[in-house]
Length: 541
Image 1 (cartoon, rainbow, N blue to C red):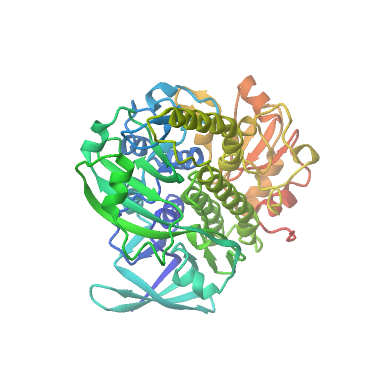
Image 2 (cartoon, rainbow, N blue to C red):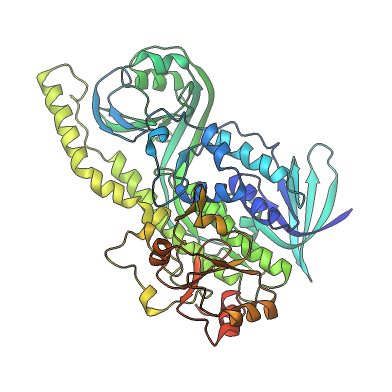
C-alpha cells in the first residue's frame, strides 16, 4: 500500500506537533508518525517561553495553556533552601500570573505549563485540523530519496503491517537518537555531556503542606555539598519533580535510592508516590547540518541543551515555526529554490546561543559555594547562610543576563539571505529595549491595536505589509506578489504610537512574524525584493 503526502513528520513530541499545526493551519497536508500512543507521563519541560506563548496565541490554544499549568494566584518564586523543612537561604520573587497585568512587550507572557499538560493541548489542536493525519503506534523503519521526494516505509506496531509513504519532504523531530538524524549522519558541535542527572517524578499533597516556605516554582536545594538538586512544583498542588545533578552513572546509579533522595530534599519523612525515576544525560550539542533538499531535522534532533532556563523545547518550537512556513511555501509553489536553505542559516545561530546560555546558567547555579555548616543550628551556621545569601545576591544580575529576552524573544536573523536589511538595522538603537524595538530580521513588536487585539494577531498565514501612511502607493509590491503568487495582505494601521514603534511607514512582515523589510516608499525593485524574500534570489551565505 502506498500513500502520498506533501510532508511527513517523524516524531510526535511538542516540536513535531507544532510543525504539524503550522502546516495544518495553512491547509497543507501532512502526516505525523509517532511510535508512542501520544500520552506523556514525564514532565521533562516545565515552562513555555513568551515566544512559544505567542505562537500558542496564533494557534488558538494560549488560553488553554494558561489554564492547564500553574495556578494563576500562586507566586512563581525561586527559593534557595537547605531542605523543604529547613532554612530558607534566598528568595527570588516572581509575582503571580493573576497580578502581572499588561506586560507591555507581549500579549501573552511566559507560562508554567509542563509537558504532561502541553503535549495533549498540541495533540488536540493538531487532531482537529483536516489536513493533518496523526499516526500513533507507527514506526518509520527506513527511507530513501526518490525522484520527486522521499520514499519511506512505515510500520503499524499493533498490526505489523507496513506501507510506503511517498512524501515531498521528511522532517525528523524524533530526537538525538532518531532515525532521521542518524540517516543524515550529521555530526554535532559542542562539548558533549555536561553531567549525568536523575529526575524523580512523584505525587504528594503532603509535601506542599508540611513546610513553611509557601508555593514557589523552583525549590533549589543546598546543603554542605552545595546546590545538589532542584525540586520543581509541577502543578502547584500535588505533582513534583526532583532533579539531582552531577551523578556518577558508574558508581551511583546501580544502587540509586530515590526514597533517600526525597527524604534528603524534604528534610524528614513524608507521604508520596513515586511515578517514575528517569536517568538522563545533560548535553550541549548543535548539529553541524540541519539537513537540506527534502530532508530536515528540528528540535532535539538539531540541538541538545541543559533544561536550566527553559530554552530547549522552546527553541525547537521556533524551529517548527520557521521551517513550517517555508515548507508550506514550497508545497504551495511560491517558495524559491533557496528558501529552505535559509532554515539552517536562521535557526542554527539561535540554537548555538541557547545552548551556550543554558550551559552557562547550569554551571552558574550548580557552582554556588558550598559550606559544611550551612544547615547547622549554630553561630557558624548562621554565618554560613548569611554568606551564601550575600554571594547569591551578588551573582543574580550576571545569571539573569544569560537568559534574558534577547535570547528568548528578541533574537535576530542577522545573516539571513531572505531578509532585506539596511544599515540602520544592523544594530538596535542603544536606548531601545530589544524586545520593544522594531528591527529587520527580528520579531515584529507587539502593540495593542484594540482591546484584546495585538499587532501579532495580524501575522501567521502569508506576508503582511503594514502601512502607517495611507497616502503611500504600494501597487508595485502588490503586483510583484501577484506575479509570484506570494500571499500578501496590506493592513493600514492608523495609530501614531504604533507607527513610532515600527519606525518606518511601510513594514513587511513574514508569516513567522519576523520583519522582512522596512521602507519609506514602495521600492522600484519590488519584484526583485519579493524574489529575495521568497528565496528565489541569488543565494547568500
